[in-house]
View 1: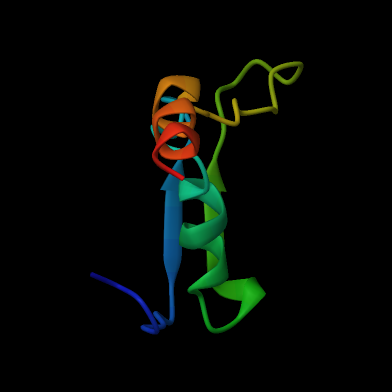
View 2: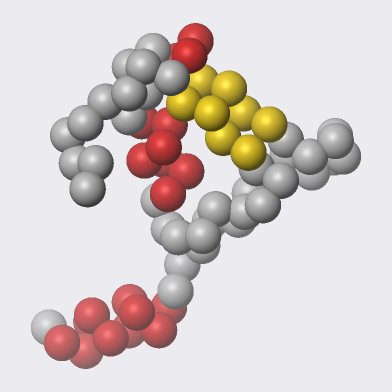
Length: 66
């Protein structure tokens, strides 16, 4: 687990989407300096977004357990 850990450099390849909610945020927020973040985007300049993945089935299950 990487809780509380920081890294000096982060590289992200967004040719494939992130696969869980908050994964992109965690990857970016653990870097010690924003200038050390490098992101590779697909060449399609109009596609500079990534999907915020939320598994509603999991959230429903958690709510039902409360």
